[in-house]
Length: 538
Ligand code: FRU
Image 1 (spheres, rainbow, N blue to C red):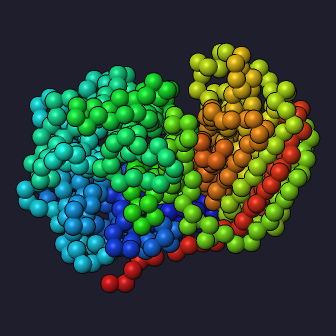
Image 2: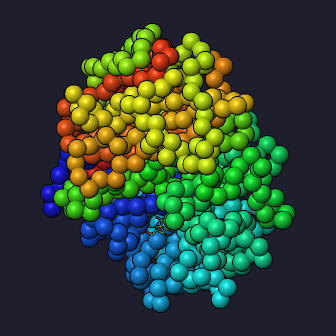
Image 3: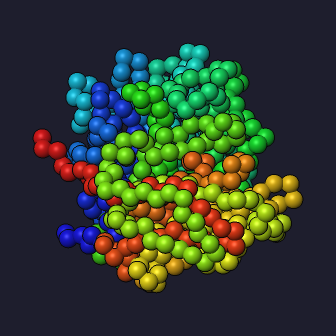
């Protein structure tokens, strides 16, 4: 099978071909990072799901192993769906996953490594006492899946299983002393009305002091918790920051965190079914997420592949304690090659300039903008408070003249701007504060047909006293993954330029606001290609 390479990514994770979705069971074991993922060995659309398996020493260069978990027993004969890894005492990894049984019921199974001395963990055994969690008669057996990493407290292991009852999203809680006998708790850990099915829940502690990650079982004074769920109705994820009471086994979101579709997102673009793990080798928590294609199935057939994983992100609690911050893992910087740097460049209204000297199609761009004052910020229309940021971005795109902004980057642009994906800020003035909008607008990204070209956007709560805003964009052929304001907001977009491909892609900086913007500092690098899922010889 030959794959068409035009939109294939250079450094984002993907296998050589076929469909992928959720990242599964990420973990660190004996010097290696393991990533499993939902994979169709037979085609470019979802189906025949197995756990494909890759390993890496640095989260950037990947080697592919044989599939770790695939249908072979009655309790997973119709599919091996998403799940998580837990490292048990004695450094013993254990996988929990959802199996689809002969009656199409979703059941929770466990698998253990055949040989703990193999750091590659090539072979996994699924003992015959599976499943360990069955849907009881109060549970909807076709909406009962995606077990989390377990955490331990007061003599019991605990896991969550995502579910729904009518329109209420639910994270069921199960407890076990021995990891085999699991009992459903009387109350779910948390639930929320009108959110629909909670896929891929993730629940983890974050430190109140500093960016170090915490092992999943940490509780106590110096800790908050994050609960994230993936909503299959909107195809977005949302999370809350809150408090976990281990005695009551209940999680309560803080009153600064909205529970529901209007809540905080890890990513305001194409990013789903994400999962974190604790990396003890660098004391950090790392977030993986899946980015689907935004082209047609017909295009996917031609490409021979569909789906990528986002760049792994270090995740921690922001100093405000109201949200998380995310940043690409530092190892990504080992791929930086040819560099260009600019300082102190002014951009008046309507101006743009090109950043030359790097491969704009496969690049890492880090830029800080400044502005002399906030006076020219346009008024924030109260009607927008009712809208999704995406609708505001669609109305007030990069071409619309503004006051303070729009300013930012034009990524994956053709030479004469027939195509471009702008990533930009607009700053508005609300009665009591300023509101910052970050947009990643795919509307003009391609002259091609049959593409989904959303105006992804989010509002970000950022301190503007220094009159500066920063952007970092990871550009990779059909990916623009942008970290705004130091990682307070992230947007991943998938775009498919016709003209702006390979060495025909360009990168520009622009300002369409009446306030003059200064590019204080811009660093841009060509990105090298890592080893991406070459098979390991046995
Ligand atoms: C999320 C999801 C999970 C499920 C898996 C199946 O994308 O629907 O809920 O376990 O994908 O591939």
